Length: 110
Image 1 (cartoon, helix red, strand yellow):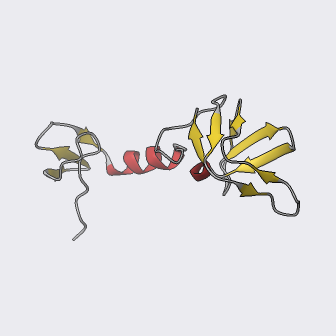
Image 2: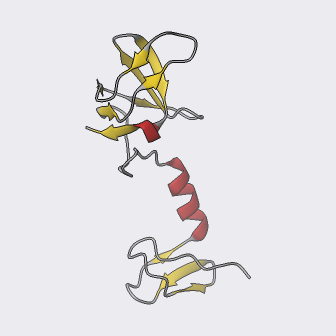
Image 3: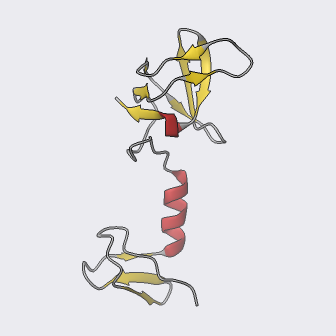
């Protein structure tokens, strides 16, 4: 038997299956388990859990050493106009040192 997930809207665990969907008995929210998994996988979130979009400005939350170079990207550096891409590194951006691909877990929305 598979575990029934908590409600994505109110986070309470009083949910039950109804055909192909799940229903929350507390708030009445109804959702499809396949649609929720697809939606969650396409959203890129920063270190604080805020969703990121193309053109957002972000700030580095820690010093990052660039592989194959002596450059270190300093904590607190603001990056303007990011671009989201698929792959291991979700964010593509331009900074003073050149073009970089960064992981969203090291960024926070500015």
